[in-house]
Image 1: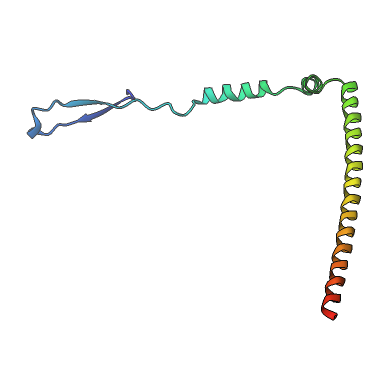
Image 2: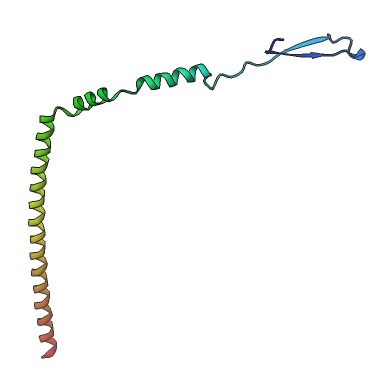
Length: 119
């Protein structure tokens, strides 16, 4: 039996003008979703696209350079970190000096205000 066609039979005497078998075309099934073969091929391709460890190692070396370049980069980063730490220490000592100076000025102003109100 054809799966794309729906068959309706009518044998009633009142409908003698209607043919005995009426074929109605069913609409095509939408192919929105991939078939199992497509899914299998996609999974196979995904497995083929996953590189092995040697390929990954080579790609990493190509992306980040060889060991000498990496070591130079790390040494440069350490120098920058030392400079940043020294700058931070100087900044902290300057901030402490400013805080001490402001505290002394406030204390002196408070003493001056107390003298004005006491006399």
